[in-house]
Image (cartoon, rainbow, N blue to C red; front, side, top):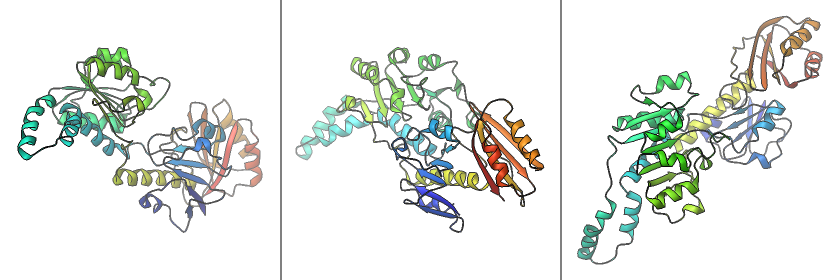
Length: 390
């Protein structure tokens, strides 16, 4: 039996992926093998030594101490793309809100008072203040062509917009999904200079903090619209406020309300609704539950933010060693030497690395003695070891 502790309400469709005959799932489990989390802040929590994996039912992992988990040999899984359609729809809605001045127009209508004739006159006199524009022929730059960015770019192209994309780390899989009509930008500055709308879909890293700043806002086609449904810190809020006040930016749409923006009619702020659809929550839970189950039962790693992708079939009748270690020379040599010393023949072996971490799966035809596991655990640089039985 595997024990999985949930730290938030997880969609039942995800929990159903963990069969009851092999999994105990609850919010109050002691010594869990894995954690499933949505928004709970694990930086402030004590993560038990028994934890072998953490699954985040969403894309971002800012609420998880990933570096500390890497040092313990614990993979952190997420659900990239599971909420992509939900975020795409919110981005498109915000583009339309900005283009047609819908948010301030709604506020205007809510404040109307008087008789039917008076209201009619007020509407006719006031509507000129909310004249907008249509999207076909306007330019959109999409920074980050992952699952969400690709969907946004493709949808905008279908709306008749001129779309530019930039992502130096774009995967082959996402490239196949991208409409050939999306034009390639050579850099962020190149993309910004060609775009009236900019939508950012990148993780928050040191390199992306304040990626959209005063200098880049000045490069935009006027009046610009910035759409930020990634992370608040990717956009310099002070630079946005200055541009909105100067009229060089038409609107700022984001999923991260801030005190700086309170009451600003040119800011369209939603309360972190990007993945807040029933479908997205179900998809995220299903994806991360499947990944946790595959790791616990076979050691395979898919969609981890800190481990390399490592997938090797586990045939019936085999036993498998799962080893996490520092990515330094001669680790595989030391592991195979230990196997030889215990007269264990290797049936199959997979070794992958990512940054400072390496991950090895070794399949054998016979029972793995506890002494062998102990010897491998003693090798300098080994972070975690586990025996898996098919």
